[in-house]
Image (cartoon, rainbow over the protein chains, first blue to last red):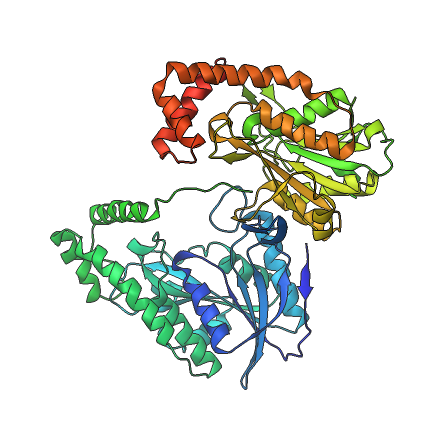
Length: 305
Length: 272
């Protein structure tokens, strides 16, 4: 179980920004886009085989060319305001067929990521993910934050379009950030590092959808741009968001009028006070959306060699 | 080598053997297990070690199949006179990398293998009357060159890897020359046994390692199977037509494939 370091960049107290797949891939897309915008350079990776099974084999003219595993790579960039390390994981290590990272493997991966970060003097860690919220899909998603200390509360509430998780209703001040986007922060806090999770809001009824939710990734990216004092071209995300919006809109047009009416109240009421649709409405939406996704997802399997 | 992973029963008297690996899981045409069983039986293979199941297999209870308890077994046997080491196992449920590394650790550091061969059947859309081919995947071009002349056909493929390909890749990283043998099994024989493919595979191994095997004893099984299929073709015009189409290089749709496979299974494996 190891780390392969291709290069040892000289970094001054870099912040670590991590992204793993999750609901709507909100965090992963935000972090990956930021890494691309800053043209961050790859410098290390976590050897994948202890965490993942290979996903693809390439055989040409009788010769085994390659075996591909999900990538877990580190990148770096030095900015005027801050040096940065990015970590992007293509998959979360799971045990016993769970969807998100749990157990020993996840803990090991979190520690390996932080080992690299601390080796370069990192003192602050950001992860990003999704916050499932009772919002209307046409509303701009806010960024919901969870932090490791009171001091950081003061800081994050100054971020653009950002609220604390406690401002979202219906949670009684408690909750769980599932998978590595949460676990990494917990391990980082244990190691005495500052930890901040920035989660883009996604409408509750879309949280099980198989497609990304770039509109929320954009909200998260705006916050990062603000923190880092950089300008970002959001063209790509806007285009992607427009495509998804079309699908979402088609689904929404299929709602029965009474549900649509109640759901539309979400456009006008404060997001912090979840209202608008009844439990029966939510059930109807969920059942019909699941059916829609199932139809889209029905594809034949394939053998292996 | 982490010795805690193994039960070692005896020290192998092998100098520089070849390792043959067979998987019982998803064993298309029962080729893999039959070939290894045949070799161990005819060559006097002795069980020398096994990988302990803990951490690799589900051990929350005991599974059973056809009234019999199933115990996951991952055993090494040595055919000392022929310099062959065989490994026969279920695919592990967990920790493939650790498990496969353990296979190579034992074979490399304890038995000093020079080459690796994996054996697994691959499903083919050809008819049983078409001569079987053995598709081959090598992990080193030099090894591929050295094995020209054995009538193996180079495979080209991209997709999800089987455990044999994972092992072949790990062997490549250790600089162990390796070959995955993928004999073709007509899809309608995949659920049962394919003695013709088993014989073809054994005849390759016989030539490669100069084993002096008498493979004639497999001929009655092949003849018997061909006879049963011929009778079915006479009785069932639909099945006959499907096989005719395959023999002419035409394809069958999913429903037709299923009907053919089911019909064949009923006459070839009536007790299953």
